[in-house]
Length: 308
Image (cartoon, one colour):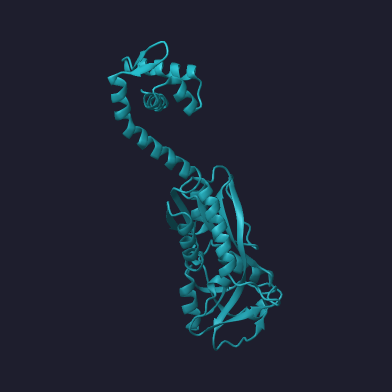
């Protein structure tokens, strides 16, 4: 196979008409240029220069080779530029995972900003619960994933990943407009309530049961869904109360929020990427998501430290 470095040197020699001048231009010694041209002649099995005591003259074969190599070298230049762009995170593919609430309220703005900052990068979004997304990061299917974790529910994290807390959010009790409770309440006031919760095995369901268990009762869960729009509709229809993260507690018809006293449980939204080998695009995407989260997620008020 012809060495492209030798072809570049050949082009410089043919253009300048001198090994010494080409060497100076390319940053080589004259001896190195001479050795490259001898190696190229062996590769192509043709004489490329008529060598004289004080000059060299390219043969027709050398001139033809320079002309034919120009397009190939231009393509190689383009490939090298693309490789540099990929290494610098300016070209390639970025695969992001997220859970539904973050996908709805955070990622549209963040992805638009990432696309503006990285116009050469193709962005793909995969949605799912943390139990599905975390293995995809470990297996290099996803570059970055947004997951959640409740501080009352320990989560096992895969080896080889790095975690960054994007933001921490309160949990809010959602009740129907005509509910007997108003202002604030304690979990003990909710022993006889019907509950709407996320599906069994999720952090939200485990968090609800642990908080109620600490108060000495098991919540009566009548409906389960991981879609907070459905949760709001069920609460608004008077079918129960729900404990939801702040991002999921968007206003809905027939619902309102009630404070829970003496409870500090929160949900952390966490960005996960591989510890080894994340590209600059991944790091830029992460910093953009954190930046957008700071703008879009409400800061807790001075008296909100006890909301659950």
